[in-house]
Length: 80
Image 1 (cartoon, rainbow, N blue to C red):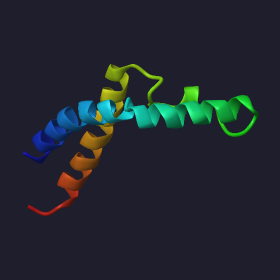
Image 2 (image 1 turned 135 degrees about the horizontal axis):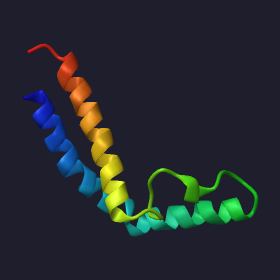
Image 3 (image 1 turned 180 degrees about the horizontal axis):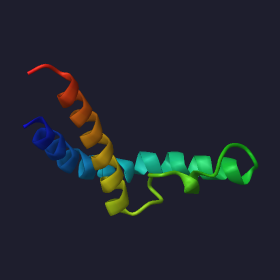
Image 4 (image 1 turned 180 degrees about the vertical axis):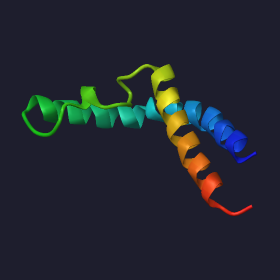
């Protein structure tokens, strides 16, 4: 039952956090980091695993997998 709950959380949380990743505030931060990289400071933000530069489905998949894994781990370690 806990694995089902973990998958359900992943299915719900993935798209919600993918939407949050594409918010105007996140886009501003990404543009700032990109400008900083062009000036020679910091890492290339385009190489990040997720963010506003990636497609929605990719962000939803990554966030869903992260939350499903976290909740599966919590579900397996708690006593019934």
